Amino acid sequence: MSDEGSPLAGRRVVVGVSGSIAAYKAVSLVRLLAERGAVVDVAMTTAATAFVTPLTFASLTHRPVVSEVMALDPDEQIAHVELAEGADAIVLAPATANLLAELAAGLAGNAVTAMALASRAPVIVAPAMDAGMWTHPATLRNVETLRGFGHIIVEPEVGALASGLTGVGRLAESDTIVAAVESLFAHAGELEGLHVVVSAGGTREPIDPVRFLGNRSSGKMGVAIAEAARDRGATVTLVAGSMSVPAPRGVTAVEATTAAAMRTAVLRSAPSADILVMAAAVADFAPKRTSNSKIKRDGAGLQIDLVANPDIVAEVGEMADGVRPFLIGFAAETDDLEANALSKLRDKGLDLIVGNRVGGPFDAIGSEDNKVTVFGAEGPLTDWPMLPKRQVAERLWDLIVDRYRAARPPAGSRRSTRARRR
Ligand code: PMT
Image 1 (cartoon, rainbow, N blue to C red):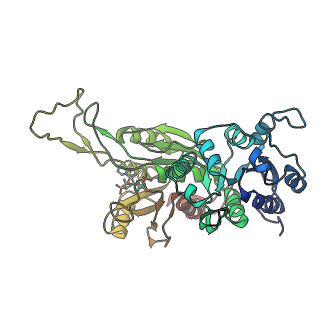
Image 2 (image 1 turned 90 degrees about the horizontal axis):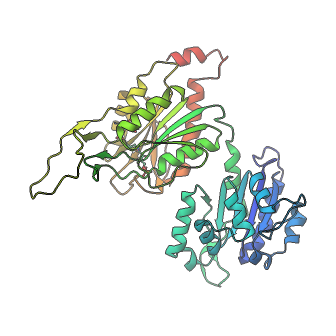
Image 3 (image 1 turned 45 degrees about the vertical axis):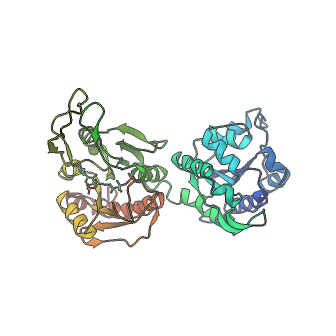
């Protein structure tokens, strides 16, 4: 296998190995990464050294292995911090149930967790454990926490386990893990120099100091889109409504939890944006009046007058050429996805619209996965299956980049003036 053309060529990848029988598989993983041209360092927990010796990894990588949390490197620097700061990517494989719990809790008691906590590089986690441990609510919760940190989980596979049982928990194949690492860099730099604005989450329209009109949007879809844009090199502004997930590292987050605040934030950032993706679920209506004091229950019902909120993305759609960013909206629909999405695309002046279903068996709101269809003015452009939201975001960016480049070729190209005039 050669490193020719591999997105891993010259990348610094730190592999963190924890104490599972699957630690022996990390040897082939390290070898594969090195064959693809990556500069590979290895950090190990003490338990991992009982399964594979540091010498094995050092022989493969020709680099010292860090297995002590307080170890110094040959330059007398703290070894796990040096690894953390130099890493382009971190791969934790195998990651035991204990390691997942430590990472989720932010513990740093060994060389692997200390290195991962100190780093701001993207982290890929490949768990390996007994099926019962993998499906325990505590582990599932820890995995969710790690996903919330933006870590990418390469799920364990079904097969024969060390316990002698068969089930889910086997470390994913080295090829699968390497593919996940490569995909981190496959599109690196593609959005370099571009400012991308993404809105995410729902808005909350206040009724009184404790109540609001809102929706169930978690922000997961918009956050995945922002993360993917960041990883492709864009400067990203995230206009964050009410979200159940944290804003990702490496983006500028602007909090905007009402439609009015979101309008201000979006209109402020749109003129400097090259691309705007409106994934937020903006409330279409807001109470006409907000009570300054908590409305009392008096036995009678309560009538709330609502007024229509401004359509933020439509306002951006009306901006003049040269100021208006390339514009992608979302359509959350219970019925007639195609007809509704296409009429929103036209009415709001969008370049693309992403249709997804809500309220039924394929509910996009709050879920980990989404099944979307992207529409252009000519009709549906995609036929994608249900995918994790991060994968939806990756495919979406592949499509957006193609369309954006076609509509706005780089300056100097003969088509650029005509295309921008539209
Ligand atoms: O956050 P998650 O839990 O991950 O869920 C993701 C999602 C389902 C919320 C997301 O994928 C989605 O569909 N977002 C758009 C939801 C929505 O408000 O759709 P809409 O059809 O009502 O609006 C159409 C477009 O107009 C959207 O781009 C919306 O951001 C925009 N809009 C809507 C109203 C308004 N007043 N101003 C707007 O800009």
